[in-house]
Amino acid sequence: AQSVTQLGSHVSVSEGALVLLRCNYSSSVPPYLFWYVQYPNQGLQLLLKYTSAATLVKGINGFEAEFKKSETSFHLTKPSAHMSDAAEYFCAVSDRAGRDMRFGAGTRLTVKP
Amino acid sequence: SAVISQKPSRDICQRGTSLTIQCQVDSQVTMMFWYRQQPGQSLTLIATANQGSEATYESGFVIDKFPISRPNLTFSTLTVSNMSPEDSSIYLCSARTSGGAGDTQYFGPGTRLTVL
Image 1 (cartoon, rainbow over the protein chains, first blue to last red):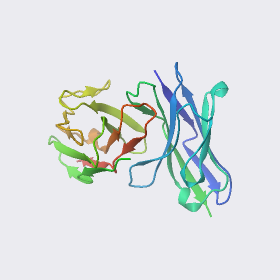
Image 2: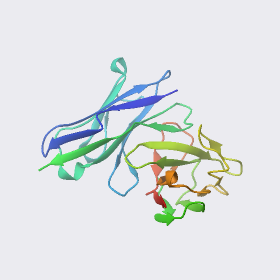
Image 3: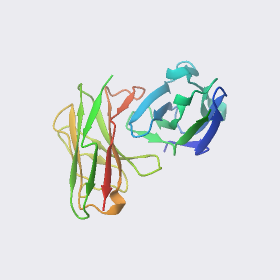
Image 4: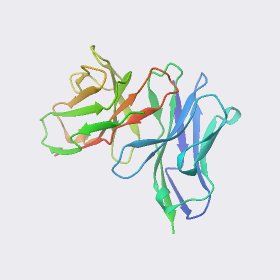
C-alpha cells in the first residue's frame, strides 16, 4: 500500500524566508506525487504534481518540489514566503493504476510579518 | 480542468437524521470520489462513486451508513445516514477527468456538517 508522511504538522516562517515542507513517500511501485493547498473554508487546490517526467517540478504561486528516489522524498519549497501562503498543505500519492489518492496528515504553514 | 460544486455548503443536523450531499461537475469525468476530513485532520477516502453501479467503499465505510449514487458522468450524491456527533466533518467530492493516474484530481469546496 502506498502512503505519504509529512514531517511537521505546523511550520512557521517569516515573510520573505524560505519555505520548506517535508514529504516522504512509501510505495512499492513508482508513484505519482502531488502537493495540494487548502485555504481556510475552501477545497483543495493543486499546487504541482510529479508524474515521472522531470524530477524538479514547478507549480503555481512560486512553489516547486523535487522528487528524490534515493531519499523517497518530495519536499515542497518556495524561496520567499508571502503572507498569502498561509494555509494547510497536503502531500498525496497515487498509484499508476489511478485507483485513488492517499493524503498525508497535512502541514499548516504560518507566515509571520 | 473541472469545476466542482457541492450542496449544501454547510448544515447542522440532529442526531439520528440523514443528510444527502450533492456534487456537480461542470464536465464529464471518468472517476468521482468522496472524502471525509475530520476537524484538523487529513482527508480519508470514503468511496469511489461508480457510474451505474454500486460504489466501491474503503475499509471502515459501509453502504448502509454512506449510500452513494452516481447516475451519470457529472453528478453524484453522498448520504450520511443515521447521523451521530462523530459524523461531524467536512465531506469533499473529488473528480478526475480521465482514467490516467497522473491526471489532476479536482476537489469541490466541501460540505461542513455538524451533528448535534
